[in-house]
Figure 1: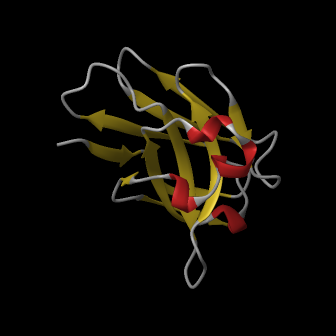
Figure 2: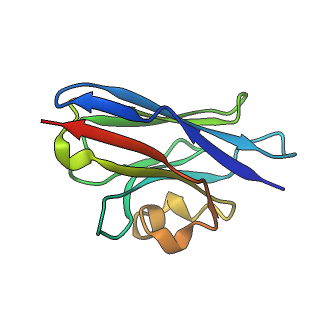
Length: 130
């Protein structure tokens, strides 16, 4: 059974940095075709932060994260990363790793939509204080 496990969350001050990791724990020898990070703030809907097509490297970011966050993957380690810099209080939330075996994240209309992804981790909390 495939399982995504996030780690790396924590509490930082505004302007700080964090690096999230998501390990794909399953019998497959390769990462899921499409992977992404989503954030859910208290009382708000889950929103897409960044996605990556693990085979081709195509990435998409939400407008508020462009230039501050970087999504990357290590196919050999079956691990997805999210490097977050210049963090703001509005970045606070529970960050989820998600996977889509169909590869739809190659297309911008699907990349940051929750319905694109069938596999989800449990989330890791990020709290940014001002």
